[in-house]
Length: 131
Image (cartoon, rainbow, N blue to C red; front, side, top):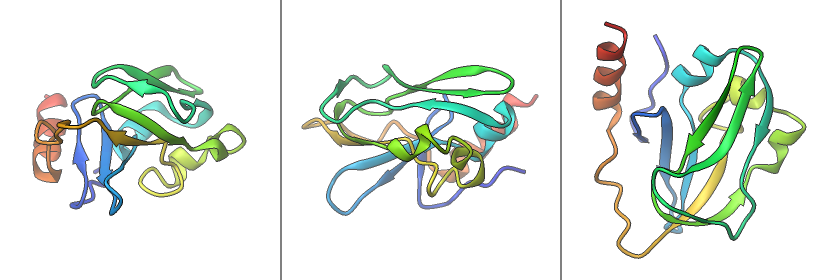
């Protein structure tokens, strides 16, 4: 069973979202997503300053099996992309909720996280997806 931290929010496209103390959000792909993809060989993250719309493809993760877009869970401005992943894409596999984070976003005014699933909702979503 995939790890699903209780303190995060989740999307149906398998991104996780952590609300930071400074009002930004950190985004990555879930343990389930990295497990399904296999060993990461390449990660492309957005540069700081890029404006994103919720649902927009904003990063790419490529594994030995496939390549996949990562979607912005909320509208806002990219504060930082995880540049370390260019040289160490395996961190997405090893620490999907830690060093394997992809980007940080400063949400646009009024951008809410209410549409995201909590851990229990994401767990139920995964169970439904497997049937």
